Amino acid sequence: MPKKRQNVKAKSASKDEAVRSEASTEPISKTKTIPRLAQENIEEKNNVASLIRIGFMIALLLGLAGVLFFPKLISLAESTMGMKPVSSGNEHVREASEHDREAAQGETVKQIQTNVKDVTLNEGDLMENEKTELKKQTSLGDKQNQDRSNLDRNKIKMHAEKNTDFKEEDYLKKSKSKDAEIKATGDQSHFDTANMIPPRKGRNGSGKPIILNSETSHVVIDPSQIKIIDSPPDTNTDDSNKRSGKNITGKSSVNKSKADISKSNLNKDNTTSPTTIEEEIQKFKPTFHKTFTPKKIFDGGRRIPPIELLHQKPSNSSVKVFLFDDFLSAQECDGLIRAHDNHVKAANKTPILCFDSVDTLRSHLKDAKKNIKISPNVFTAGTRCVNESFSLQLGNWLKSNWSYSTAFYPGESKFSKILAERIQKAMGLDPVSGGKFQITSYPVGKAYKEHTDCVVGGVDQRDRVVTVLIYLNDVEEGGETRFTELGIWVKPKKGRALVWNNMSPEGLCEPHSKHVASVVKKGSKYILIRWYYYKTFYSLGHRPAPPNLPQRESDQAMVMCDVYNSGSCRWYDEWTYEHLLDYEKNKLKLI
Ligand SMILES: O=C(O)CCC(=O)C(=O)O
Ligand SMILES: [Fe+2]
Image 1: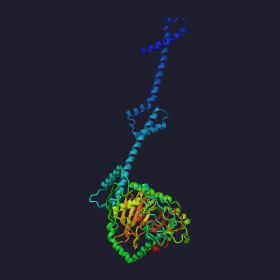
Image 2 (image 1 turned 45 degrees about the vertical axis):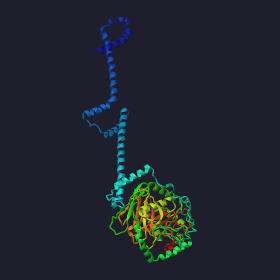
Image 3 (image 1 turned 90 degrees about the vertical axis):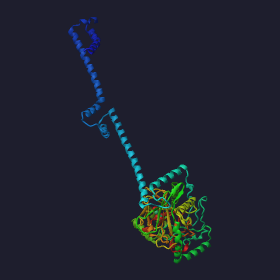
Image 4 (image 1 turned 135 degrees about the vertical axis):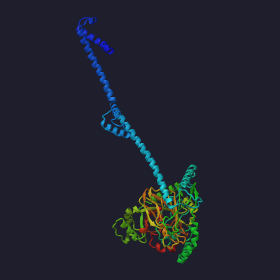
C-alpha cells in the first residue's frame, strides 16, 4: 500500500527517533539495530495513530458535507426513488412554511424563505394584473351599462342627423376623439371658470339689494326701482303653488317705474280671467312647440347631437325627453360646482325651516318618530316658517332630508349668457323665457320625491313648459332621474343635459311628466336646472329682493319642505315668497 502507508511511515520516523533517543542512549544512526518486535510495535503504533487521524479527518469532511447537502440528498432520494412527486410552486410555499416553522437555522431556511417570498410576490403580481383587468372590464361594463341604460334601453332616435344607422359606439368614439382634439389644441372654455358665478357680496333679510361683483353683474336690483317686489306679498314674483325653488322671480325691468309696474299689473289682472288665459294658451300653442326643436350643435370643439329617449310605457303623452351628452365641458361643470359649494358654505347660520302646510310639518315629525306638539306660536306670524329655536331643534334631524340649491340669474355672470345661448341653439328655447339657473347638490342619501315641475290642473300662465337639467358630475351609485309614467330613467353623467316638456301644446301641465330624483347611494350629485316658461313676465329671470318676513340674519338660508307625498325639503340660499301666507291668494294678480 503502498504510497500512503510509506508516507505515514516516513512521517512517523522523526517522532520515533525522538522516542528512541529518550529510550536509548545509542546514537540515532543505530536505529537499524533496534530489535524487530520492538520495531514492529512502533510501526504498528504509528499506523494506528495515522489511521485515527485519517478517520477523524474523513469524518470531519463527511459531517460538513452532510450538513450542507443533506436536505438536497433527501429530496433527490425522494424524487428519484418515487417517494414523492416533484413539488409545484404552491406546494413549495407550503413546504417552505413547514420548514420555516420546523427548521432551526441555516442557509437552507433562508433560501426557502426567499423562494416563498418570490412565489408570493408572483401571486401578488398576478392578482394585481387580474384586478386591473377586472377593473378595466368593470369600468367598461359600467360605461356600457350606463350608456345602454340611457340610450339602448330607451331606443335611441337621433334628431337632426341624416344618418339613420346611428351607432352608439361610433358616437362615443367620435366624441372622445373630439375631446382629445380640444385638449391637444388647448381650445378650452371661452370664459374664466373661476369667475363663472361671482361670489355673493352680501345679502340680508331687510330687503336690501344683493350687491354683485361689479365686473360680472349687469343687473343690480334696486328696491326703490322695483317697489313691487320690495314689499311682499302684494308685489310678488314667482311661481305658483308648485313646489318651491321653482320660483321664477321678478322679470321686472330694472328701469321700470312703480307706475309702469302697476300699469302692467293692471293689464295682467285683466288677462287673468279664465277666458283670457285660454285665449293666451291658444295663441301660444303653435309657437312654443314649434320652437322647442332640439338640434345638433358644436361647442368648444365638441359635437353635441340630441338624442330622443322614447317612452318605454304606452302612453298618449306629449312629453318628449331629449338628451345631449357633453353639453357642458368638464371645466364648466367643475366651475359651477365650486361656485355652488362656496355659496352653500357662505350661508353658515342655522337655516329657517318653512313648510308648505302644517300637515307637512306633522308628517315629517311623524316620519322621524318625534312626539312633538305643534302650537301655532312655533310659526312666525304671516309665514309658514317655524321660529328660530324650533328651526334649530327640527333642523338637527330634518337635515338628513334636504338637498341644497343656490341660484344665479341672467346677467349675474358671463356664463349665464353663454349657457342661455347654447340652450337656444340646441333646443330653440328663447333666453328671455327662462328663469334663474339653479344649482342643486344632493349629498349621499338625498333624493327628491315624485313630482311634476308644473301644476297639474293649474291655470297660471307662469308655468314651466320645459325643464333643462344638466348633470354636473358622475354619481357613483344612484341619483338617476326617473320618469315613472314613461318608463325612462337617466343616469347622471358629467356634462349631460336632459330636456323635456312638462306641458302639452294645449298649454296643460302633463301628469306624464312626473319624475323622481332617486336616492344618491354613493358619492354626491350636482345638477343645474333652468326652467322655461311659456309666457314671459316682468319678474322672470330676475333676482327678487328678499321679503321682510321672517326676521332673520344675513346669510341665513331657508329650507322649504313641500307637499309631503310629492315633494321633499330643499335648502335655498335665497328668500323668495311662497312661504308667505297670503302669497297663494295674491299671486295671480301680481304679475
Ligand atoms: O335631480 C334630479 O334628477 C331631478 C331634479 C328635479 O326634478 C327638480 O329639481 O325639479
Ligand atoms: Fe323636477
